Amino acid sequence: MCKRNMRLAAMVVGCILFSGCSQNSAEAKYDDTSPCSRDIFAMDTYMNLKVYGTNADKALSEAEERILTLEKELSVTSDTSDIYKLNDASGEPVQICDDAAFLIERSKEFGLTTSGCLDITVFPVLREWGFTTGEYSLPDKKRISELLEYVGFDRIQINDNTVQLPENVQIDLGAVTKGYTGDEVINILRSYNIKSGIISLGGNVQALGTKPDGKDWKVAVRDPFKTDTDMCIVEIADKAVITSGNYERFFIGEDGKRYCHIIDPKDGFPADNGFVSVTVIGENGLTCDALSTAVFVAGEEGAQEIIKSFPGYDFVIVSDKEKVFYTDGLTGHFQNTSTMDAEVMTFD
Ligand code: ADP
Ligand code: MG
Image (cartoon, rainbow, N blue to C red; front, side, top):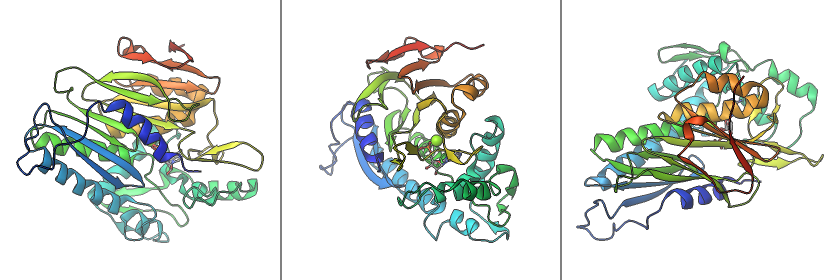
């Protein structure tokens, strides 16, 4: 069952407090009171970009083009993408574009800093569970252990733009693409001297500056236990708010269990380590995206270590016991709007 679009709806409603763009007049000026807004469907998700100031329209056109380029380059399913070519290369080296090379390089680093919780080579396992096609099935354990032989980010050889994967090793940048895309969009907006804007890429929110009135943006985070319901609001400026959760894309197996699209590279099973959603708040969208997936995988046992090694980043975690934990940096910028208890995380 695909929950992706429902998630977007809730988060966008929560974060964007203004009505649509007054783009219909040819002479419209996008100033502090009338934003220019654009809806895009790309990367298998709905996106909304909302921007204030002169040049907003031009900036949005360039941003949209960039999103479509990144989709073409990075999609794991489209046979024209660099990632597809790489996965199809049967062990041969492949020349790839700068974006793909950068993301592979960074993902390898995140593999190291998250003790292997983020591992972009998990793709063959993800496919076996049916997450690439929607034809879900519970693979047998023997098949999973066979496929785990090909999982391990340290097997990716990368030298500038040349990448080589051993035979049967395949990668997927789904865990980091939207965060990076958000960073790229924000950079484009900045290059047009835009000072205020907010974007939602499938529920991942990134803010440029503050609201035009100088106040922080209020971004709502979805309640993982309730359909179309927010659980908290975080107040941010110039930051990303990126969530990974087990309610985004999942299926219910014949055994009645929920299996989500984030795979634990240690055992090849959908991660089920005590967390149902992990939200990361910080300046760099790519880092937030990588960490939301990684901390979701790390779960109760491994989260602390990762969180401590990224002091500039804040986290909101919902446990499967229906409790909310958030890092101290959010105090004063965090509002619990759920019926769950929320408390500041403490570390050993
Ligand atoms: P979303 O894309 O829904 O926002 P995530 O950022 O958490 O959620 O990314 C999940 C995607 O990352 C999966 O759909 C899959 O493509 C990929 N993936 C799943 N497990 C892992 C993992 N352990 N490491 C790296 N990528 C993963
Ligand atoms: Mg992610």
